[in-house]
Length: 373
Image (tube, rainbow, N blue to C red):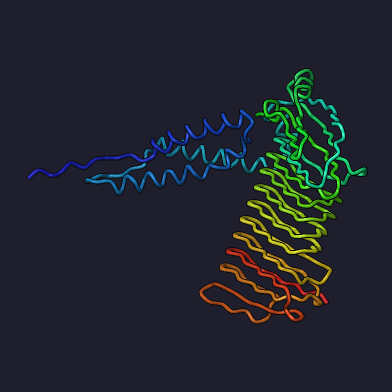
């Protein structure tokens, strides 16, 4: 009786091939201005996931076989993963000016100003802004009209190239019931060639939405029907704002101060800090801490939920609130009697009659409640 032959199968080449295809496709999309290079590199864990899936798919296949990792493929996949992870970490540490000068070779810069015509708008008008690279700053209009201006910075290896990059940048805006303002993607591609900082003075009661691919968003002293702010790589800061607020950052901190109205906050990688809110708050953070502090009594609804990070609540004893806290892997302090079961901790307390509610939840992190007299 013949012994069935044992097949030798190497794991890694398929993952490497698919990884190179995905990397090339992602960099092509980045060069076309639809995303940033750093955003593509953030997907590096998919290489490890793909390698594991390939291994199990080979293992579950029919017939007798010996499964081995392809050393060259595994080494290349490891180098790609380490390089992408290092570049991702570097982007959050090294200032953009150094990236421009040392990595992309854009040592020269040129700045020009742009000013749009004032627009008369009704309270039913909605403003939509998309800026691919650069900050967006909101302030209150002084004459109930919409004002748009910009600081355009071109970068290049020479002063001539930097000036050409700045002069080529275009800002488009379309008037109507929905006012669209967007920067030209053709002049904001790889290499940080051009950045546009938009200054937006908005009249009270306007609805506005902003999407920034790479840049910070700020709103100071603004009153709006609702404001939606989203940045893929950058921070968000809102101070002295009145109206409904939605803020989301994939990579960056979110800071709110004295917001009058409901706040819906989401962060993937960064810290959320909320100071003296005057309205209901929902804050969700996947990787980073959440802190809510108030000198005024709290009696609304507050949901603070995180996957990996601490949660801190500071509030006066005169608050009228029922507080519940739970942590799967971490301690809880400030709530008195804490229940623990299989590493899972929970606790609750009430201030006043418990009119409002505060729910604090984290998977991995500590929860601290500080009640101030």
